[in-house]
Image (cartoon, rainbow, N blue to C red; front, side, top):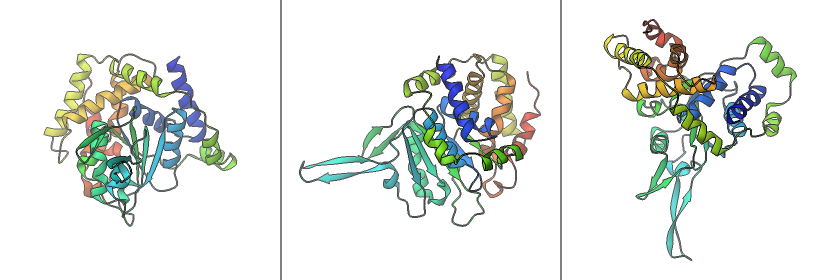
Length: 305
C-alpha cells in the first residue's frame, strides 16, 4: 500500500514537472535515503517548482528561505528572546523547523549564513544558546544554486557541499515537454491542485525499508574499488571520503526501493554515482567547466565484480 502511494506521488509530480522523470525520482530517492538535495541550474528551469511539488505530493510541511547577501543565521535558525511578562527567555523557531526546507539560491548568502545549515543537515537539530532543539521528522533540505559565474554568488565551501547527498541539474526540457508546458496549465495552479499521496509516518517507514535493502559483498567491493581509485589514481585532487561511500550505498538502496526491489544491482550504483560523487570530486575553481558525467567517467570504467 505504501509502495503504491509512493508510485502515485511520483506520477503526480511528473504531471507538474514535465519531461524530468529521472530528476524527480532522484529527488525522492534523496529523501528516502535520509539525505539532502542540491539543485544546480540557471533560473527558470523549475528548481523551485520541483521543491514545492515534492513537499506537496509527499505530504510534508514546507518552508522556503530566500537566501540573500544580508541574510543572517538567526533568520534561518531562530532566536532566543527575553519575554518580560513571563520573566524568562523563550526560543522562537526559525523557518528551519519544517519537514522540507527550501534554501532558495543558497549561494547568494555569505559563507557564514550558509554554514548555519551544517548542524541541522548533519545532526537533525539546532543548538541555540547552548540548548539543542530537535527538528521535525522526516527532515529534508532542498537547496537551489545558480551557476557560479552569475553576479552576487558565493561558492559553497566543501564542508557544505559534502552535506548534500546528491547534486542534480534539471536542464532545459525537450521539445515535446516544452510544447506541453506552453500549451498546458499554469504550473502554480497545478501545484495548488496537487494532493498529498503519502504522510510523514509512511515516509519514515519507507526510510527504514531503504536501510533493509540488501547489498552483496561483491557490490561492497565495487564501491570500495570506486573509492580507492578516486584516492590513488591521481585523476582527482581529493578522493572520496568514507561519508561519500556511505552516501553512495544509501542512494543506491533508495533507487532500488523505487524500482520495487529489496536488493541493489551494479547499475543502481552506476546510476547514482554522478549525483552522489561529482560534487565531492571536482575542484571549486572548475566546478562549472565539467559536467557531473564527465567527472565520474573514469570511475564508471572500473570493472564490476
